[in-house]
Length: 194
Image 1 (cartoon, rainbow, N blue to C red):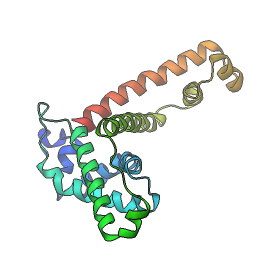
Image 2 (image 1 turned 180 degrees about the vertical axis):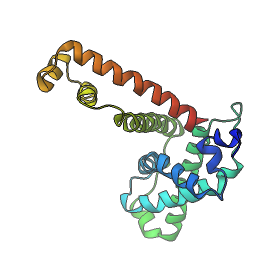
Image 3 (image 1 turned 180 degrees about the horizontal axis):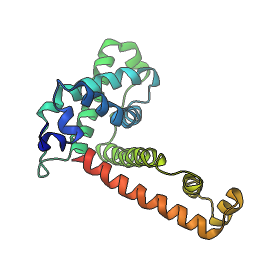
């Protein structure tokens, strides 16, 4: 395999409908993010899995036509529009098929600005969770414990008392994990946002 192929990002690989491994990896990266966004657009939990399957099918169909062009749109923008449109279309389709439910629970389309803001927030959380999961395997001992306690809002004194370490150790461990987390977030953004 030549160097160009080995440097292809996940997105480029997933655009190939014959690359099942890339598609499965793509789904594993984006599935939780998509579920949250779908749920926030349509909180009907009983239908979320159906909506997820519809969205994944539409992504699979549309992805080969997506062009990476910084002047046109980022992948995240393209993805959020596709998810929104697919979910809203599914809602309309469902309403047509079930007029009784439509009368009892009228669906309201979310405000576009609110939807975009929600998608952005969920995307950032998704990237942060992936990054934290990826780097957690790198650290042993109390480093991740210190960092996770600091994320929960614990003070350095509280962390030191709970983990029986010195403040210097707590600061060092926290900053070491933070450094790798920032680097991993940047890497994931480069890889997943295009």
